[in-house]
Image (cartoon, rainbow, N blue to C red; front, side, top):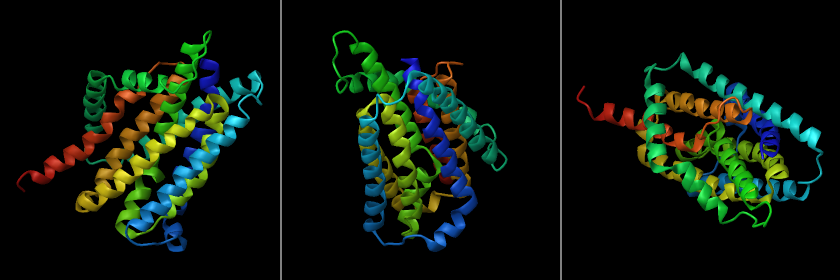
Length: 280
């Protein structure tokens, strides 16, 4: 089980590092040469392209699932864990200096982790995934666990990268879908790598991504005055810690139920909403 899980994160995390690099280095220039549409069309084109890319990558990766030898899987396994840790650390360090509330990420992780544990998000997710796992008499439990781990990793990496969060917002506010199309290109390869280890079931992550990006787009329309750089900075810090936690789990340094910490991403928006309601 661990052998299969480690191989996954190599391509995935490396691609997420590339996503953040593209955003940091070329974000401004990409906007000038990007694809622009208006209204709901921008969200539909960008998000559908991203969703389709994951499905195509998963189908392709599923076809070559047994094409890699065990020694190569182990190597990629470790590399993915290291890359995930590097990505998470980079996201935290690059945004920490701009944070206006240096302890907000601590409160976010604590409160979000408690809420996620109380709701048993990881357990509920495992039980949901088990319904779609292949039922093999001898290896039913391992198969379910592998698919659960793979989907958990896929959802975190597909949904919580810089481009995946800023893409729908940029699309909603400015009609610019460049980030979403860039994200789609990178997720195509990412899903291929994931599916080659965990199987074609990784394609289920495409549905989560579609709902995630669509929800961000709709929410951005409603709360656009509150989507400040300060808020996005705090969300990026928390997201960085979640990706770092994924890396720790992959390398077996510390087993962390990352799914239970996902509510932590909601704490910074709630905090800024409370500040906005307080009298000046």
